[in-house]
Image (cartoon, rainbow, N blue to C red; front, side, top):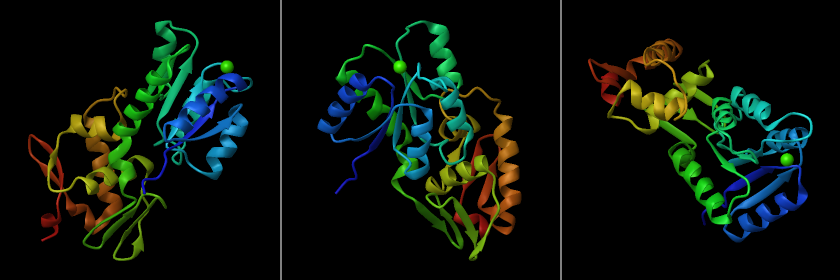
Length: 231
Ligand code: CA
């Protein structure tokens, strides 16, 4: 049976939270409600949800600062964030996306619109969530435990390199351009230079040692993760 996606609702108004929760439950999701940043953090520490619905205006820490915090945390950075905002003006939306939100939805919104947005962010993240463990030869990556090992020995690896390796290992034997890697690993709304990819690939190879040879540079095209590279 397919697991019901868990949605953490961070919303201080009980009536709105309840309405969202009821609609989500009726549509095959498992909602969890937190009324502020502190209780949301408690929920996140316990279980990682599949999506976070984050209200902009909250007592205490604002939705914006929470989004920024969760994006910077290696444990929560992969969880899609959908911001709920009562305001419709452009600077706020841009600020939300800059803070790391995947999408935003302006109140009042229809249930259908909310569900469509949630499904869209889940679909975008889906390749990374389908499989927790992946291996090639003696290189193993466990996404749930956030571990990489080579010949049974744990490797020390940075958070971005981990995400990059996770993506490459799950999409092996094909060439990925730098732009594609930026899109898939760093996300749609990130504006960074393509040579940043080269920097992280270099660091990743260094972290992998001998197994670094699995990542091939394809001249003029990008990178390929290939079993054949080890020979
Ligand atoms: Ca609010």
